[in-house]
Image 1 (tube, rainbow, N blue to C red):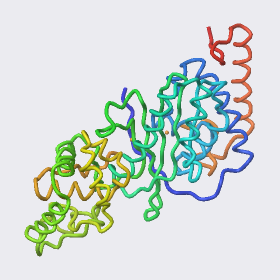
Image 2 (image 1 turned 90 degrees about the vertical axis):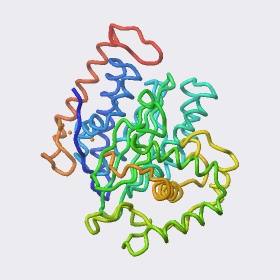
Image 3 (image 1 turned 60 degrees about the vertical axis):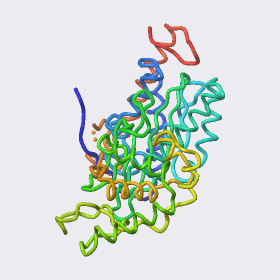
Image 4 (image 1 turned 45 degrees about the vertical axis):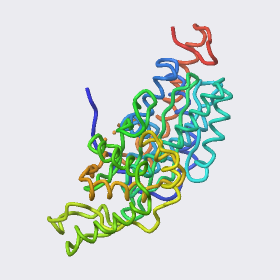
Length: 371
C-alpha cells in the first residue's frame, strides 16, 4: 500500500531539553540495535529515507510532530548514538556549520566501514550533487541549512536535507535513497515533505525533460554574448506591455494576470556568465554535469529555463514536488506531554530483548543478528 500525505514543518526556535535528548538517545540506540538486527543496514537506510517513516520516528522518540526541529534534532541524536563500528552505519554532516564537515565525515566513516577510496569519492559526489539539485533545480524558496548523509558498510546511502523559508517561517525536508535514484536530474527523490506551494520551478520533473535538453543545448551550442542579446531582444518584442513580473518573482500567483504565460521577465543580474563559459568549454554531456559545474546555481538554471521557454517553447514544470504516530507524547505537549516513565521503561524492554538475544546468538560483522 502506498503511503502519502503532507507534513508541515514550521520553523521553531530554541533547543530540545536535556532530559528529553538523553532519553531520545537511549531509546534511539535500542530501536536501531533491533532494526539492524532485524532488517540489516540497507533496511535501516531505506526506512530513514522514507519521509513518513522518519516523521513517525520523531514522534516515537517523543520529540515533535511537525516542527523544523524534527529533522535537525532527530538526525543529531542518531549521529551521536549510531557508531559505524557497532552498527555498520555512519551519519555524516548535520545542521548549519556541521553540514560543512560532511565531506570529512564521509572520509572518516568510509575508513571505519572499510570502503574503498573510489567509493568514498563517489559518496562525496553524491553529497554535493544532491545539495545542488535541491538548491538549484527545485526552486521553491527554501535555502538549505541542514544536510545529513547516512552511509552503510555496503556503500549504500540516504540523504536527508532541509531548507528554510524565512518569509513564511516554514521548513522543507528532502529525502534521497541510493537504490531509488536512477538519475540525479529527473525525479531522484524518495520524497519531499513540507508546506505545498502553487508555483515551484521544478527542473527535475519528467515534464521538464525537454526544457532541460534545450537548456543544455543552449549552453553547448551558442555564443554567450549572442545568447544574452537574443534573450533581451525577444523579451522586448514578445513581452512588451504585458505586465510581466521580474525573474525574482517567479513563484508569484498567476491569478493576478490570466494572460501571463511565463513567470519571469528579466535575466537576473547575478547570472554567473563565467560558469556558463566554463560549461561551454567543457561541453557537459547531460544536465547533471551542467549543474555540477561550480557557479551554476539557481539564477543560471532559471535563466536557461526562461530562454528555453521564451524562445523555443519548451516549458519547465511549475508543479511543486512536495508527501505521522505517537508513542510517548511530544515535546510541545501534542498530543499529550511526554510520558517519561513509559519512555524509560520501553527503552529498558528493548535493551533486555537484545541482551537475551545476544546470549543465544553469535555476533557477526560487529553487531548481533537474531536467529
